[in-house]
Image: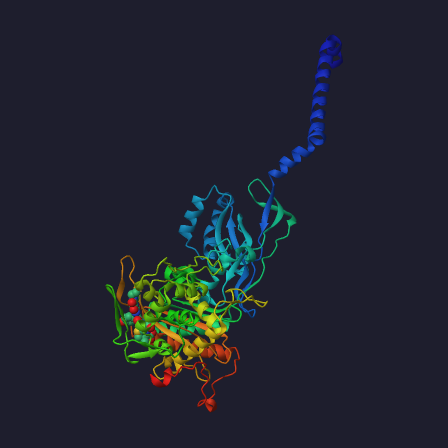
Length: 577
Ligand code: 59J
């Protein structure tokens, strides 16, 4: 038939044949085009639709105390996520999944409905690897796991405000975690995987880049001292019904912060009940008027002026002094009508200090306070750290001169105050502060003449050891030095001072045979008694005592040596007052 037809219509047969040949040719060309000529382009396009780069989480660096005790540790956790589209196809297993996740089946189902078109949704973050695996083992279609790291803080509330914390994405958000984020954070790696149209993982192809782990950071704090500081501060807050407090221990030779405690505190491992007041690293981010704890620093200016020596006498009678409309008052006049310089410190005479200030001038005091770092940048760069305020005047009015000399009209952080005292303890040499362990000998600057610093050491030892002294600050077995302060709290918003709101302070150092540690105690609004010598001095005593023992410092005031005096000043203040 065909032959017959072909013979009958030869042109038609040839046409069909030619058309077929053309079609075969076109297909062959297309094959050649796709497989050979456009191959690279098409492969790339195809891969772009299936190859994905998945980050490999980097291990965040460990934070330790100065002896390697862990303060912040990254532990591997499993985060479960779901492909919402896929999960729609496994509705019969939703209740089972909700149960395994410990979630309410009804609200869980609602959530899945809402995310029905999403290819990615978190189910739960940060499970222990075991729990995560158990849920993955249920093999519910559309449920996947990612490995992540989660921060754990072994010392909990004891180091909370100093160490800070990270956010869910493991980036530093507060404290050291934030300040040293670049050092601690690693660089995530990259893994190439193949995924299908619906985002399901088909194949783990290769690691493109390994994750670079973050670096370890050793802080200057000693966890044992940190525990001690925290415990004594918390006890003092409870005993005195106080609102808040902070305490800093400094190594005066290296500038290292050995402890920095703040109360109230919070548990960084469970931040659900955390309140803003608990988060404050008060020792660095709260400023206050240092009151009488500044008097020893003003005394430095007096001695440095060459116009005063410790045995010089000042009339403080009758305990008040009128300067224009402003009256300078002494709280206690029990020390007598005339006091020498040590006596002014022991009795904390505002009048006596002011008279010396009028003689040497406000600028002399200003210069010393500035040199000692009050109201100056510490250079630590701690998040939220305050600089405080040390006002200057071109010509110092009498009222400003007086108030500066006994610690008002100037605001400081607890850290700045302990730094200033550390200079007196370190024979006038200032070393930069450090929150990280110092492994090389720091560069010290002589900011107070050595003889002046040593004289102040003796005077401040008398402030504790003399008959009318702050005996509650004494440390059994050691000679220590220090000064209490009780400052009315400046009112917020309005001018002046709040009635019945005080800050109890104590700043000191020891042991006097070779001063190594300086301590500042700040207790905010105690309600049962408020004098620094009553509220904060006992805390100083307990913390200094524990520090000297934990650091194996040999006692320099053993009972058998008791009759011997190791006072460096020529002052006879103790006996006379
Ligand atoms: C004080 C102040 C407020 C600010 C006064 C304490 C001034 C002042 C204006 C009255 C209690 C009080 C600029 S007291 O720190 O002198 O620590 O053991 O708050 O004087 O002029 O009912 N400290 N404290 N003063 N202001 N302005 C003494 C002293 C001090 C003690 C006790 C007794 C004040 C020994 C404080 C302590 O040294």
